[in-house]
Length: 178
DNA sequence: CGACTTTGACCAGCGC
DNA sequence: GCGCTGGTCAAAGTCG
Image (cartoon, protein in one colour):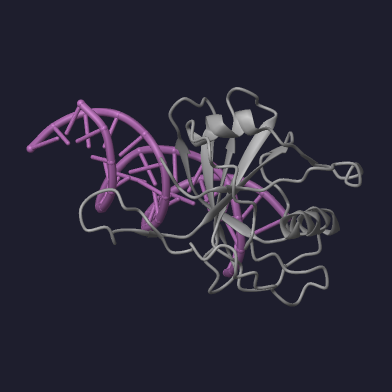
């Protein structure tokens, strides 16, 4: 994992979300640790997480900003080697690893990663035809911080009502628009 | 019984 | 070429 265009989502005012069970935190330092000291991972805010709006039945297609969705891992040789979907990582300070974001996830793997005493868990969206993945990892430096990395966009509405998390996501979209 | 988790094995990319 | 590491697969187990 070196230089994925992992945009870091970010909610600057936690005030109106104070009733939420999750505390969205902003911690660039911890994030850069997770990134492996890439300083510019903070530039791109979340742009296309494919989060259904609160009415829950249409997917906003925020396509414009990140058109770097077909990310080319130009490491060696030919250039057009590996196509990777954009990833969107964000941190939450939570005691539980799994955020109930309203989608149904199936765990398909778990790995011990280097420089981290906590394993990383791999989840896939169980909705048919939707191959969104996410990784969940707890920081070893601060075990209260859970880093969730989403890959891909959901092609379907949210599957169960989680007003809280939708609230958070809606806020994120507001910040993105700024 | 279906959906989900666990976990070891496998594979590919990358650095040396 | 080799070893390390991240990501995925799939069989077995668990749970409601």
